[in-house]
Image (cartoon, rainbow over all chains, first blue to last red; front, side, top):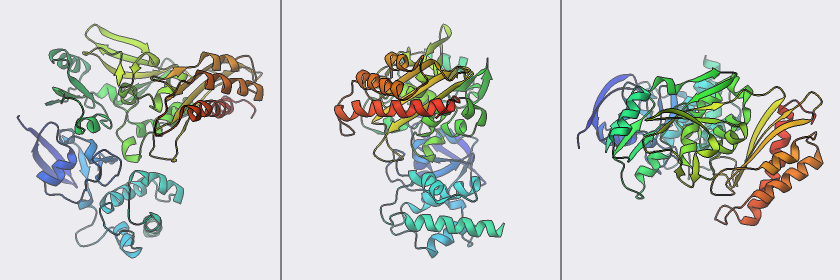
Length: 159
Length: 288
């Protein structure tokens, strides 16, 4: 089976890869590009651990083929911190202890960043609905929601 | 398996015609990729990604209504204020499907072609009188959305055909629509029952036309003529809503499964119809 050559942009960097026609973007990221920040929880779009953005739109990378990334702009958790400087959401997750095992954390951070880019001042209800597709089996969600709300406040004050 | 991403409808049709009939159309992929991953079924010969066909990516005004390309996502529909203003029930139904992440990819046409009896957008489209435009070897044809699904997971489309767009007719003067579903959870769930209502009121507040549809209470979406009949000629008052609820419970022929019993679904079909009609009435400008 011949592989497909894909040219794309990931976190601002041009990236080339070869993939099988049925290979998901998540598998490409993890197994071909060594970007293991995006996690596979369910592989069926239910848990959100593989969340990335494509052309600024939040999606599950397990529900997208690698071949579909041709010419698109992809953003993953690896592009969130600026070198050693954490994104405000990442800092607040640590401050609020909004994670335990950490499997869901990259997806939730990517999803929360996408929310705050669209809506810098979300209500708690809006935040909970936006993140409904990101499952966490450890925290009970309250700490996550508090961390996102607190980060949003800091980001508003800083801007 | 091969992956194709044609940039025109004609190229897509040529690829479909050249295949062995086991080609899967990829729009949002939120059902297709799950199916590919599961052990069920043979791997398709090819996947045909229609998202590179520019004309399928737009929401366009047409003859007073809206043509929604088969590759338009639920999120894009929800971000289109004029579409939301005309057909809020259809957009809400679409936006109920899955998470934010799913909304970034899932499409109306995909929800229709997946042919789940519990598809949320389908009863809303049927109530709205939506038409599906189907491209095929003999050109394009338009059929009512209700004629696309023929059973769970099955559609009336030929092997060399695919849906290129969904057309929502002009919202009539005094028109309003709504869709409601019952799910045990408020988010990330599949309808136990769904109900779409579109109705039109005249200047005096009398209902002059109505379409009522039910999902998840039969193998395919159901247009409930008796439900519409209960509303037309009334002010959509309590007596009319009672008659509507009875007609919908009567029409429902659900199965028992882990998400709901026959008795529960039959009852809830009436309850949802009553509530959806009340919302549609308010949206049509009627007194609440």
